[in-house]
Length: 439
Image 1: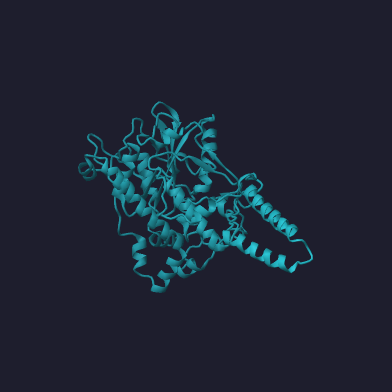
Image 2: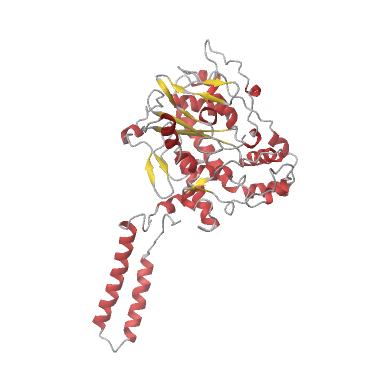
């Protein structure tokens, strides 16, 4: 795979050094006329500058792929001014070698309009990027069961599937595990979803439609999330049906070797879990939010590990900020308020905050050296979470400053007059035989 970009930097000091060396060389070349040598040096410098300018700005991306984009992304931090995409559709869907507009019919004025809203009756689609062990299962159930909708989703009791159609026609407005299934792969990440959702909906609806996509996700404190995944794998989960699609193909076994032999890693110890270099639990949130095409997908020889981490983290931050909504597992009430205000939708139940979790119990039992190892393995996720937390509270402050009834609204989230959540019991749903590999 050809690299997307190559950075070329030319400094004034480089030219100064070149000229000084040229002068020294000129003095030694007494046998040649000075004027001819000066002309030669001038022509060389001119050709070098012309070449840099040409390759930097005019050479086709498919041939040279020369731009400063990755430099900007690798240095991207929360201190850098960003365009927060709160409540707005995702503008581009990434592909292995290029990017395309996911919404060709959407004007720039629409994007800048602060009153822009999710329109369920048009062609807007909400896409839920479900990262393992972030509370996404509960949130996904809220989306299909507890929203106060003109046309509620209808769920089948013998299948973990609901039909979420638009009020005015039989088209889906929600792309998620419980509404469409794992159409783009089990726990599909940013790279998979952005290259898959549009074509899957075209196939499902039998027509090509210009849609607007509103991406949403949940993040969780990285240490707790990692320990929760460890306990889940220890009980027998594998997610072995995940595709890891990137660059036009599924990741090979050479690129992603298994950490275990047999059907599962059941009974694994924490030290064994952390020792496997191919374990995708480490920095999972950063990887799943980044555009992996920028780092050569799962080809670890594409760039150095340090540069790979820098670009991947910067891409994850950028993509997170481009999402219409994201919440943090540790702040359920704020997440509910931000979602409702962003999409002008209301939940019929309040989100529950579970502070006592399996991971918290596990955390209290591990050794200090194990904790340090987990922190090191999840250093990108820790930085991403810090960024996400700051951005989420910025969004929260921005929304509540516009809400004259904020105190009343926030105190009564999930309370709708005349509406009660039905008694549909998800725990009684008949699970697929391979359910433990797909949670």
